[in-house]
Image (cartoon, rainbow, N blue to C red):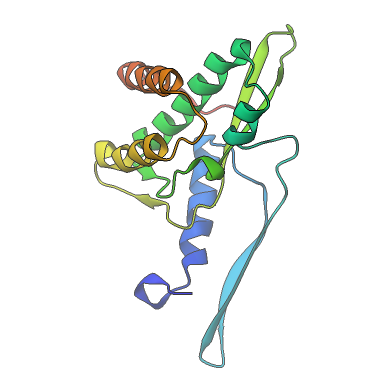
Length: 172
């Protein structure tokens, strides 16, 4: 595997996992991550826990993508990407198979969605928050898979609205 500046890509991915956690962006729980140089060669290992009860957006849409939850899912996804953007982070590989959805109900039986991101090896910081998200939003739009055009437009409107709102505080 190629790695920039003669360092394993995993080191950048570990940095992204830690930064996303500080931002309150859900990712698989990091069990172990490290790299070492042994006999002149890099060795690296990253172990995360499985995302229990999360599914990809394609599977969610294939299962019927409950209309009552659609707005909740799209709003949560928009909030997640806006949170990254405001912190100057770009996911870098924002394809639907790197975004996972968990739907359920909260204490008041209202529909609720959680979003988790994975495969952070291409994540990086940008000096400009605008540059940080332009790439991710474009990728998600181009590779949206089963997401209907109307849902994409709703997602884009929510992103624009959230960017105009004051910043949120990270969720616990």
